[in-house]
Image (cartoon, rainbow, N blue to C red; front, side, top):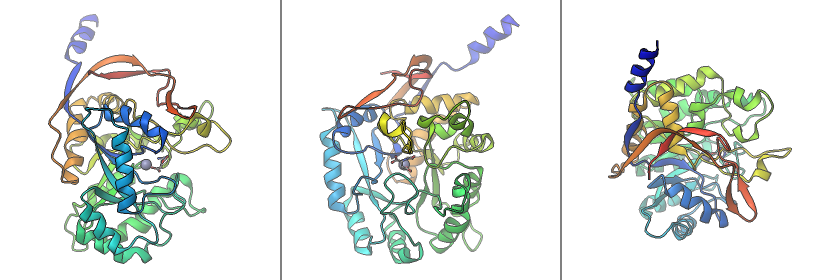
Length: 364
Ligand code: NCD
Ligand code: ZN
């Protein structure tokens, strides 16, 4: 027994080398918080798809250029960090906005939030039918549509909102716009996995233009972690954590080698005060340890070998970006996560695993 254990340990991977990663879904926020968040995030990721749900949202190329400059100003000197900007889809987004976004060379997608679906989504789209011409313009321009895939109808149970969105909105959308590049963001259900894997056009041919990001927290946790043994506000995000069978389906998809699944952390910091109160904000901060958390998730089913492509190849292929040249070394070694990170204005954010350990560590 003892010998078996030692042998098994000897064969367990302890070090791995992965391609330098990019994050295809990240909330960097704005103002003073940028000065604290950008140094943390840029120490892990070279490129980041920056979400536009500021208040007010980023709806024009001019606003995106200004926001991008504020991010670059917050980047530590000498660090190679490239924010990939997005626009926020509103009812007023026009075909001209899409043409300008494509021509700008700095906009990588347009984010569609159904109005009211999540944090700062009040300006989101209220009718899919009314944005049809703009979607056609995006299809022509090959500008990706990034979707928060949840319906907001009050009569749809919160645990079913992604599933209903896929049936009611996404399936018709994909048939209507077979060449539109779509990312279904932060998927949380087996239904979403199945949809991506079997997506077909009207003539039955496979549709390869639809992909999905998966967060580390949806790979590591299920809804019991949010709701059992007390309410855990720092486990609350949208789409909300689902049951264990969905988590396992996500883990299988992320490690499957299917290039239509790739890394998007959805790291979404809120101050502790905004999380620990009677109506808490949705969002989990994972930017402090994103790669290490993904490594833990992949390793939990013995598939650490699949990590490099998920973080450094598949998303890059989807967005037509060259893979990064650098290599990152990870080691299986416990490290203690700080209780909080300061994000300015007397505010702290509680990171995932605060005060606890993470089992993989990134070497500098
Ligand atoms: C995000 C935020 O806080 O901006 N929150 C979240 O729970 N994921 C918004 C989002 O991506 O839905
Ligand atoms: Zn998000």
